[in-house]
Structures are given as structure tokens and as C-alpha cells.
Amino acid sequence: MSKETLSIRNFCIIAHIDHGKSTLADRMLEITKTIEKRLMREQFLDMHPLERERGITIKMQPVRMQYALGQTPYVLNLIDTPGHIDFNYEVSRALAAVEGAVLLVDATQGVEAQTLSNVELARSLNLKIIPVVNKIDLPQARIAETKAEVMGLLGTREEEILEVSGKTGEGVEKLLEEIIAKIPPPWQQSNPIDKSELNNRIAQDTRALIFDYEYSSHRGVIAHVRVFGGDIKKGSKLRFAAAGEKFTAGEIGIFKPALFPMEILRAGEIGYVVTNTKEAKMVRVGDTILSENSTLNALPGYKEIKPVVFSSIYPEDQDQFEELKKSLERLKLADSSLFFEEESSGILGRGFRCGFLGMLHLEIVVEKLYRDFKVKTIAATPSVKYKIDTKMGEIEVYSPHKFPDGHEIKEIFEPWLRIEILLPPEKLAGVMKLLREHEAEVGNTERFSEARLKIEAKMPLRELMCDFFDELKSVSSGYASLNYEFGDMRRADLLRLDVIVADESVPAFARIVHRHRLETEAEAVVEKLYKILPKALFALKIQASAGGRILASRTIKAASKDVTQHMYGGDRTRKMKLWKKQQRGKKRLSAEADYEIPAYAYLKLMKK
Image (tube, rainbow, N blue to C red; front, side, top):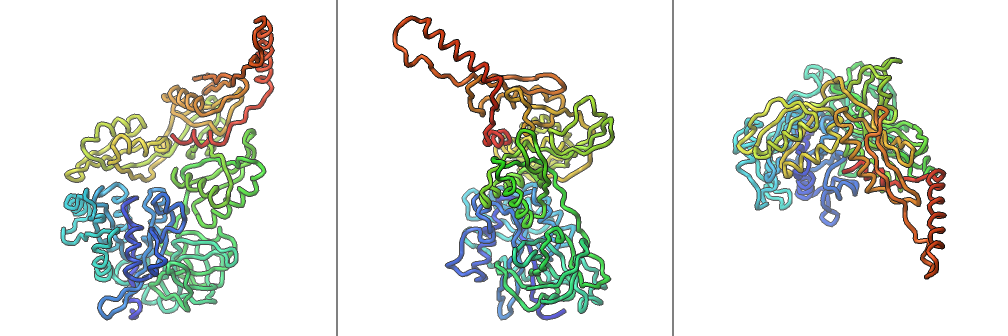
């Protein structure tokens, strides 16, 4: 092992959302002088303004820091990862590229559900985990209780758990020293490459994991890689293992965190490779870069990212259809998990059926379309993928308005989740009631720590999308946390609920509902639209129907206008003639006029 390799430490910061990962990364950048003080800003590694506004990391970001311990210089490669469950696959790829992980736990909130998931991921890859309690400067910090929870989770001793404040910088230098001391340099512990194979191949055969990528209109796809074998230079002849596409490496370099060119990327290093490949579909997160004629196998763990939430997106103005298409294509270049294909609706016109990793991912994409590309969109009610056995054969349905009528269906199958909830004991009754309302099957309930219970349950993905997360936070006063993973497909008793406005069905409002909740959902959607939709010059009828029955109905009164306001005194019959004429006009208008639903109504109906 070379001296350069011995001085490298590759690590991630993993935590539940809002536990302070980005703030801790800021202090590391300051202490290692990676970023000049005059250029420093909060959440520096969160590159998109939307990330800084929301206070969350959406896209992972690598950075190379240099730090001297005594007289020895070290290279610290940090990958800052997202905390939200929607982006769990990104976290898994980042963990596969490193030898260690800093497990960050908020001292005011303690261990949460996503913390458990991250620990299991790190353990499955045999990573060295350094436990850290953050936000110790806050007066409400529960340092002792949080340490007890971490000890129970990891089986570590209390003195092994570090205390830091990402805000003030307290304890961060000690953490950097622990990273150098405890996280092994590349190849000193189990990793994706077999050690015996490594000894034979490290000198000549290239093998690198793609954990992320970005796109440049001039240079094509720029792959973010961890080199596991050999080295990569400008001009190296390489190929993608999964796609089979060959390419010649252009510029190569490291992250500071901006792209910084280098002469060579050696085994153990993290950096980027300009592939000069203009087709983004050739490059996939989790794929392996090999030498052009290499006989080595790809690194393990690669899998296609599959969307789990689907929603049809249409431009507000059909004249912007081509602009929406170009915008989605550009977003896809930076977000490999985004799926879309063209579709059309009789009312909304041409648009795209899009697939997302979750509800947050959907919100982020819609927001980026407007912020980055100035395209206003209409998002249909989100749905999941159903497998349906019909009289004509088996089909897969993503969009509610394409869901077959009840008489055509033999069986329906929908995806279920395995979920874990951590919560205080006093919130148990409210959470159990919520789980029953959302069709969950509750399994084990056990004490996780002195102040926490852990509930294991199973529930349909469809129900998780029905504002379950927000309701969980509400009934637990913000103290419960949720983690989930996908389970199996199960039979379901579902029907399509259609929404009819002004005697015309609106496909974007259609939704898939369990039979026992049909009437409740129908009344809720009609009532909400009654409050959202603006008045027209004629009476506007709103209805919800399923299985050939009208389940709920409301009528918005016509916008009134005093047609007699110009009249003073005189016989009342003159006014009555004008009122009858106005009544006939409204009736004619109701039969002939088209009612245009404003774009904001679609978004308001999607959110509670």
C-alpha cells in the first residue's frame, strides 16, 4: 500500500433529516481551510437555493479536504448525503464508496427512525461507524439520554461517543482527529473488492464505482467516482459495465467542492471523470467503470432505481409543452431517479407521466421546474403502480384515470411497506389510532430506550401518500419519526373515484380509494373543491362518483350581479323582467360555456 493511500480517509456523514449534517460539514470546511472565509456561507455543500431555503440536503455532494495531524498531512474525502427517506438509494451508493461513516444524532431529538436505517446500511457494508451527538450547545439538549440511546443502538461505550456543536464548532477538531485515527485507509478493511483479487489487479486493472453524476452541455456526463482498483488518467480507454458503452476519459480531478483538475486518480481516491458521453442514459448511478478490455466483474450492489410515486404533469399553458419537455430532460441529466414519458389528456392537453422516489421528490421537481426553467405546471393527484388482473389480461396501471372500471377487474395487487416508528410512550394511543385509520397491520411494539418506543408495522404505500407523515407529526406533536422499506404486493379492494366539475370528468382529480373509504373520500374531495374553485357566471356543480354512483355533490352558486342597480323607483315588474332575462342567460351559459379550472386548484387539492 502506497504512502498516499495510507493518508486517505473516505467517509460520509449520515443522520436523520434535520440533525445538522450540512452545518457540521460547514465547520469541517472552515477548520480544514478548504473554503476561504470570505467565500463561506451556511450549508455550503447544498448547492441549490431550494436546499438552503428548506434546510435539507437533496443531492449528495463530495468534497476533498486536507488536514494535518502533527507533521502528517491527511486527505479527507467527505460525501455529504441527503437525510430524507426518499433519497435512501443515494445514501446507499455514497456509503459503498467509503470506509467509514460519522453517525450524527441530534441531542434535542435523539435517535430517530432514519438513524436506524442508516446504521443498518453502514453495518451491511462493514463500515467503521463513529457516533457523534450534535447540538450540545442548545439549552434543551438531552446529551445523557441521547448517548444512552446511541449506546443501545451501536453497543458502544459512553466514552466512544463524541459531543459536538455544528453551529459553534465545539468538538469538531476532535472529531477530525477521530476520523483519522479510527476510519481505516482504503483496503485495510472489508470492501466491495475481494482482497486477493485486489493484490493481483490493483496495479493494472481499473475499477471505479459511479456514486453520482452531473451533466455539462460541452463535456457531456461527468461521473463522480470512487476508484477501487488501478488508476484513471486523461485519455484512459474505459467502459461502463452495465451499459457496455466504451469511452475515453477526458478531464479527471477532485472536488474542492468545485471541480479541480488533476493528472491522475489513484486507487482509494474519490474524484470525477469527464466521460464526453452526451447520452445521459448510458451513465447510471451504481454502475462500474472498467478498463476497456477488462475481464473483471462489476462491483456488487448495482440496481436500477425504480420510481414508487407517479403523477402526471402538464404545463399550465399548452404553448409551453416543448419547454416543459426540455426542462424535464435537463432535470433528468442531474437526477437519474426521475422518470417521465409523454401522455395526453382530453382536458389538460399534452403532458408527461412522471415517476418519483416519493412525495418530497415530486414537490422538489415541480418547484425546480418553476424556479430553474420558469415553467408553471399542473400536477395530477399522485398514485402508485398497481398490478391488475382484468378480463382482458394482466396490466400495470400508474395513473388513476386509467384505472379500469370495477366490472372489468378480477383482482388488484398493490405495494405494501414495512415501517418502523420511534415515539414517546405517551403518544402511543394517538399513533395506534392513526395506524388503524391508514389500514396498517401493527406488529411488534417494544421499548427502544427509557424515553422511546419502537413500533413495527406494515401498510399500503397508497396510505403513506395520504398525508400519513404529516398526520404522524401532528398526533405525536412532532416527536415521532418514520422509516420504511418496500415489502411485497398484496390483494386490494380498490375503486376509482372520479371527480366531475360542470358535468365533465376531470382526469387529474381522479384517485384510487379503498372501498370502505369511498364515501368519506368523496365528501372530502368535493368539499375541498367547493372551497377552492372560484365562482362562475353560472351555477357550478361538483360531484364525486365511483362504481356508477354519485357519492357526493355540492353546487357553487353563480356569481351574482345586480342587473337592476341602474334603476330607481318605478314599477317592480320592470325589475322582474330583467331578473328573468338574467336567469335565462345563466341557464343557457351553464349548458354551453366551458369552465376552466385554475392551475392552483390542482396543487391545492394535492396538498392538505
